[in-house]
Image 1 (cartoon, rainbow, N blue to C red):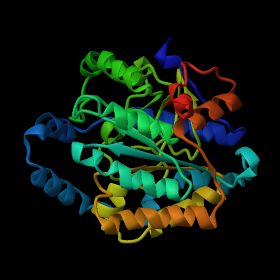
Image 2 (image 1 turned 180 degrees about the vertical axis):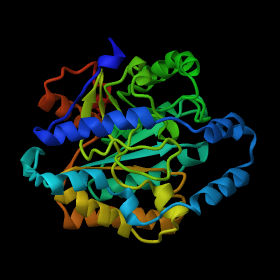
Image 3 (image 1 turned 180 degrees about the horizontal axis):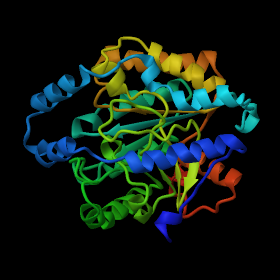
Image 4 (image 1 turned 90 degrees about the vertical axis):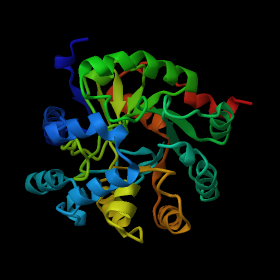
Length: 340
């Protein structure tokens, strides 16, 4: 496969697709770590957590924290300029689609999975849990239980040291281990830590979908953003960009105490019939007040909206069906209901 010739394929038509392809190309070109961040990730493991948090706060002090920074402004401006009118592309004419996901970053986060999963189940939701294969030990019984209950599991990088994309040599050396973890977990999806990304290198992973991109997020070390509120096929996998602010950004960086930012961004996604994909972390939903913010948003989704709610692997299958791309590998997660 010639990585330079890969083209994206969207479940949309018209001039909007050309705009999205241009935004994606710009993200691929701009998704590079600055010399400062490259140096930081070389020594990150040596720094105490409080030092890393202090450096992060110092960086974020100069950032624009308004909600506008999380909006796909170029997409909105293009649609207004071209007078683009969109109809729902989702099954049952749902106004938008909803995908919930969690990155489990520490062994302490493993202990918080259960109350979050119970909360989701009580409200009629299911989500995908991405585990780091070479940082902590994941209990196979936990994985089986999550699948049995209707959730999905995926792989979250290699060991979360920030070095996965520092060079192609490092990435290539870790591909066999990542693919082994994908196989052992019965996963079909991947998300890179810190949403570092290289869409061409990622083609080596044995995945049906990737979830390492975002539409717009000013707080990430790799700048850019694909500018899309919809999934798309790129090479061998479907890309599922997250489109709602991450919980760490909302609750820790911006010190929000309500779900207002999520609701306001959702209003735009809903108006444009996009995909609302959330990334949250058990490690940050670790207090009653933070878990309440997440629960409030889930209740709002249940009571005030009617999304097409699916797991990531189901979204990938649907995207392939609309773009005419065959599935690249078996959907191990689709068998969760059959497991004992």
